[in-house]
Image (tube, rainbow, N blue to C red; front, side, top):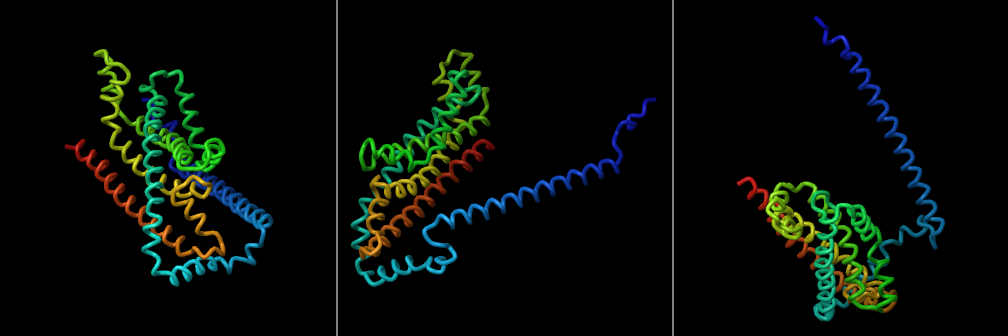
Length: 293
């Protein structure tokens, strides 16, 4: 009778191999940690050398500007309600920029995701092309796109909306494609067997499966886009960011207006975060409960 255990490793061999593997992982981890610390130290030193003033000399003044803003705001606290009303239209413009860019980016991201997923793409040979398009849209920061568009189109909310929509399309295209990878292709194959075209296969066979996750990611992106639209206002793209840049200029005596803008933006982000978080929970957990039922 053949001894089946003749070629099997012994317990001592398994223990020795495991110990050696653990030792190698610790050595590699230590080397990576040393390299990371060295890069951080070198980067901090380079940044400090190129800075206008030394970090060591100025770190103790880091709270001077916030303290000045708060003290001036407290002195003019009675003007806060009027400032909130004054900048509310800019808040509406910021939300409109975020909403429009999220809607356009979601539509474009859905198209890129379907075109870059195997088994769903209309042109399978072009899957790498659509994936690279999504990578490019995602890789370029919104502020860079906005600066180029402002140079071409002029200042205003339109360049900000286009810039955020392009970045949103790339980001959601990546997220949606990962969701598509987990979708079952059996409904798509069944629809194809009865003569359904590509749009019918996607609309009836794929979207019902991935729709809740799509909406969840889109709502999360809407929160991000509100902050992005406020940031783009600093480069002349309108909205709250533009008003905040004008109010935060040092020495103009408008810090009470800056505080009102901060308050509006903070409250808006908190409210949108709570609402979208509730909707995402309903969508994801609701769909899971429906699937189990």
